[in-house]
Amino acid sequence: MIAEDLFDLAPVIPVVVLDDVEAAVPLARALVEGGLPVIEVTLRTPSAPAAIARIAAEVPDAVVGAGTVVRPEDAERSAAAGAKFLVSPGCTARLQAAMVATGLPFLPGVATASEAIALLESGITAMKFFPAEAAGGAAYLKALGGPLPQIRFCPTGGIGLRNAAEYLALGNVGCVGGSWLTPADALRDGDWDRVAKLASEAAALRTT
Ligand code: 3PG
Image (tube, rainbow, N blue to C red; front, side, top):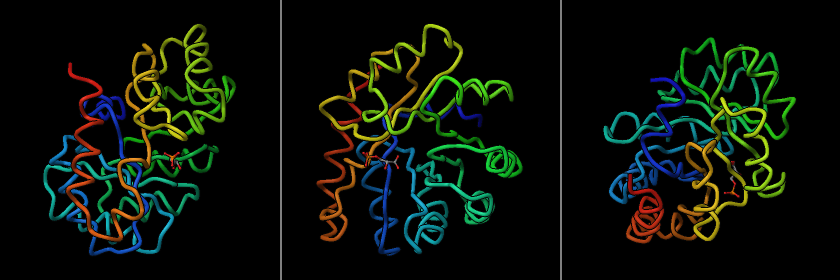
């Protein structure tokens, strides 16, 4: 799998902050059932690597990756846990090298043309655009598409059901990411039906 393949699997990548490792498998099943098989588990909680490992082992239809990869060692431990892809909110040469070394597809984060061009120099054409809304939103991303048409983005940050379609309509957007599919209270209460419903609404954003 290459990073661009992630774009074809689903229109939305749920960004998950998971405190309870026991929630990982039912949560992933609910997302898959709703039609969103690509799942980004952020390394913001201590349980993230174990959650990634559980989902990789027990939910075969899920494509689970690690998000919030900010240190070189984050890339290594995510790969060791069984992550199928990596996502970072920004990128440095060291972080890029560490992500490349895992052999996994990755979406490095950018917010400017210069950052995107720096990655393009390494042949990277799939990136995360973060923080999407705060950095300029869909209008900004559309403008980047003029001089940099070869790059496809996964915008994330401030995106929800209300504005996801605006991004998905852009030619340089492969998919969007967001945490709105997995509200903290639904995770705490084990409300997997609600998660599956949110996922199915999001999956319907792209029908082709
Ligand atoms: C991320 O990690 O990509 C963002 O924190 C997700 O942003 P959101 O919570 O605004 O969806």
